[in-house]
Image (cartoon, rainbow, N blue to C red; front, side, top):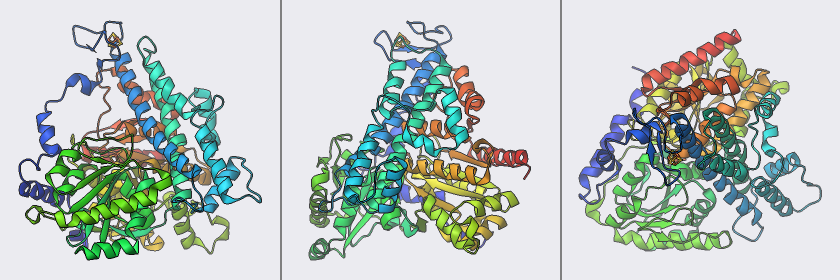
Length: 632
Ligand code: SF4
Ligand code: MSK
């Protein structure tokens, strides 16, 4: 038994909390995804295998043993390939539209308004990178020009994306040669929809190539822009102490949950909750204060900039409301269950939607406008306070489990931590060389980027947590984002005490650098940070990305955004281990293309295994094989 093992929250404990919440709720309130999943079982095999086509009204057409082609003649490979590309395009559109919204907020930033430039250094660096003059100019003039240049990336008629020049020379050359360097972001999304429109591409390989391209329009385009502009507006994150799981909800405080992805509005809610007058007002209404907690990636965003505590990840959103102490759940975009509408009606909870992108029945719609954001946020916080007295005491149950966590390790913070250890060696300051040396020496065997959602097809959080624990035991450092990072946080793996779960080498590194062994890098859009991290390691090591003992893993993914991400990760040359099968199984050609076919193009592909214990063995042997090939 490892020391302090009992400090970590197990999946069994989390499941017991969820079961108790359901048990205490009345029948109407207690319907959650678990019940709906049962009613949806068995799920449609045609959909599961990707061989149902309904892109024209001659269909729907399904591939069966007696019907190997749709009415137009499209075979299983064309149908599965088109469905797959459409998923990647939709995911890329979602992330990139989020990035676009943030670009518009930056474009409207001003000294007087709600939104300011908080990281001037990052803005100036980006302006220089993009050839935008900075000398003698007002910082807001620069911000507006940078934002406008970013917005042009969505629709420029010529050329490829600016951020591609951040990649290694080898990657840039390869992308050009393969013809997958993304052009304007919207163009790649539109081209994908055009290619998959009735009567166009039926060649599976061409569809997979475009999936890589539209994925890169996300990871090296819209997502990267979202990350950069968010840092400029709200500050580049730094490591912060926080807590995670439903135990962060407070019985005696006004609880407001922010949920979704785009931090523009939640940042305002967090600031409004710090307003002294509103805190006094909350006290006057019998509360001890205002408690903001986060769900999904909005949580990741505000956690790493303000230390806001995390109520949980994707499949925990209903459970948060079942506690009966949430005065308000305020959402922006993506990963929001429509189920929150009827569920909120079972409680006193105000369910507030704020974006025309996510309109949900049963919610109060208050469209967020950047011009009036702070006033709107204050009004909402006041509405939540006014709702505090409406709780039904009989419906309250707050599970006590919560874990300490440290969140907020963007590339800049990782470099800073490494510099802290090596500051006597001036020549390596600002590089990843200390980490590379540890990998070369075998003190660390490699690194894994743990990402992605929860999915009821596998036991929620179990795959994330089991895989992470096994990696730590095997001296493999983890960077994490999205709901995977939150699974880690709930289990206690983002705490510095998680070093007790590590092998001797990784534990020594954690002690020396004073970091947790799972580094929280942010939200889903921040997987773009991981691309820059790997690019930096490749440069500092002088070894091509495909040869590094570094891989990605999404054991419980569900979103179309994850398909876009997996495509740009593979295009960047990083093997990606999946615990949920992409819905292309009905086409042997597509299965071959996404596992081995892309490897011939980009040097990386998917490795798929539904069993988390087997998947982690695959990861470890993949990393060891890369080490052996490097001769280390
Ligand atoms: Fe059927 Fe072809 Fe129309 Fe798809 S595009 S629904 S396979 S006829
Ligand atoms: S929130 S995309 S469930 S990681 Fe980014 Fe979580 Fe997946 Fe949404």
